Image 1 (cartoon, rainbow, N blue to C red):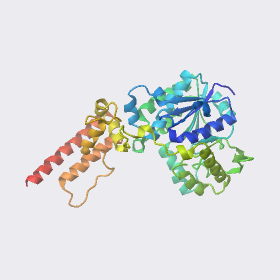
Image 2: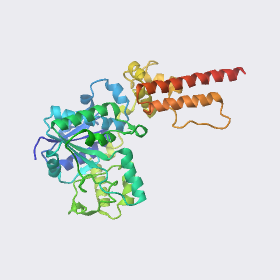
Image 3: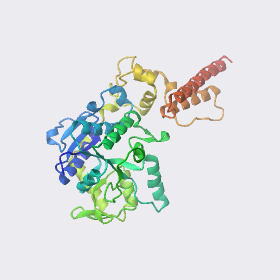
Length: 410
């Protein structure tokens, strides 16, 4: 084991308690690992790095130095925390002397076997863990787990290991570039934040290892084929081998508890593990910090930013050019004022609403909104398609106005 092994996680301040639990677990297993906290937020009041289990704090401003407000605004909080993961990996290689880098989601706890992960990575350039390593046998498992993997990505990017080799750096730079432009939760476009991109990694890069050992990245999406035994006191085994790390994905939404109740009945120790994790998060400040809002979720006047503001801004290069700081709300010449004054250009609902007796002008308006929605969702993924969709939307809007005027004159 060596100090050239680094680990990091990426959060907003409300996830600080979980990140503390993660960092402490890594340090228990291997105190020499250098742990970095990537923060896309302002540190909470009283934050003192010297009193934390992190060796280093990396603020988003250190990773995104060009068009900062405009770039950040285009991402939801979840998209933002994942969009900087690639840039942080490159940063650790270039500025921190890292030989091996492991990323862990903040809702992961490491219980052991870091030496095995380091050994695996010493032989290749990239180590990935798939969501699933065995086929499901029930229709419910297929729907919940296999189809979900097909939709959201084969590999779970709550974990990735990358070595500072020529191929590892090539992977890191490619991943960072893709996330800088396309880290969006846009399933109709085939993108799920940072995760779906890495489905392509074994196609594009050599020296990629898929780690199928059942003790790594254990989560409710794979416990149908992974039986956990033992106890926290004596050690947890998964299919007979020691638990490496457990992923509490879906913890805050309640999905983790729901799926554990469905698929974890043969592994009661996982319920014990969940109860322990709740206590650990509380010890690390969950009650005080868990509901902190992210600074990038609000306009400068304190109003929360609805997702449609971000979607339209993301798709419109003219708006990005005209309003380089869309967070700023100061008088009539700001992005929010423009958006509020142009309701027909807002991203509309997913479906065109056609009801019996619907006025023709209203139908044209609905169709116009539908095409603008397609642009906002990324379906116009090339410039000619965007021009076509925007032209159709604009033409329908003109038709709606003309039809409305004629109806009023009649």
